[in-house]
Image 1 (cartoon, rainbow, N blue to C red):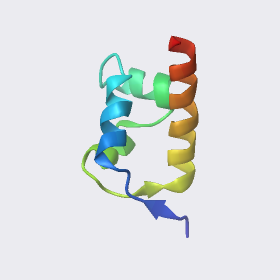
Image 2: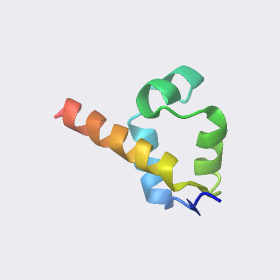
Image 3: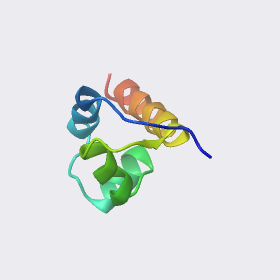
Length: 67
């Protein structure tokens, strides 16, 4: 079974700050995640480690692009 973990609230808020809007399109374009995954993040429910790794990789790209 895949390893899961709960993402700290401060990280969820930083991810949210980089989204133009919380829509299906922006979630996928920015982080390659679904609304279901976003809801889990927002609600403090566990997600797969591989999903978090992908989100963080894309978040770092967004930060680098903005700099």
